[in-house]
Image (cartoon, rainbow, N blue to C red; front, side):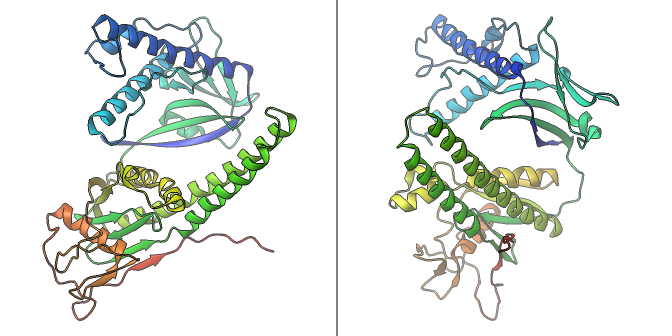
Length: 412
């Protein structure tokens, strides 16, 4: 049965063992880098980052040579799996050429997030000591006991697949990963095309209606983040490095940045949830996303415009839509979106619009991102480039409907 994952973050009090555990995970990663070099050298490939070879026995060969006196065996396996996943990603980037000179995963680390799998996790609920989770270590090592808040839902413990111990901006957190079976809901055969934009993060067209999800609030958060970062960086640059004032300002800077990042994350979640819920109500069976891989390599519109485009979170939006749709049983497909925003749906002529409205010499007028969503859907259905009657007149192509994110306003 298909499954999906949900995550939950829990802030915890630090323990002295936490740093040792994450340092041990980094040692396993560094050992993987060394063993990979040895594996390549023995097979006549002296430069693993240039001429590398993955034999069927590569992962097993390295696994036999890994050891750590502190970590659980499953935690070591998790580091090894993450290491090989990075190598496969590097190999894919190198073959596709979407990233110029990608960096191989051979950089040594001092600390690294530690992961425990289901076999090394045990939840305990006791009236005297309260709720806690026990994380197993290597044989002969004591378990790590971490208290849990009273509000922690123990009924969800059976669904927990992994737990990650993370250090983030001076705080220790546990990341719980829950595994659920996909809901067996009846989805329709309708198809919706989605154009992911920088101003409008989601613009969809389902064959009848076009919906535009406004993203100007998200843009304002990015501008505010850049302003805060520039102001703090200018002040910190005048301080002596690692002085008391330097550390105080650095902590304040990242506290402000962390708050803004949480606001951006919350806004993206709200917009994508609203879109996926709409697809569920309308009986959408397939969501078609435009592929934007490598788009940053071809853009150069000046300093300010490039900053906006390089902060464009199109990958995050696609990721959120994908996992939320999968939880509802809706399929998500990714296709090439070349020329979808430039091709007229009525006469199939190409014209690059200079503003938000697309106007063709044949008389067709519509929102530019709406044209992109319409053509992405048509491209998936095999109708891209086929002239259709789509006029804002008697045949009535519905005007786009906008959705603005509701933001709470602080009272004065």
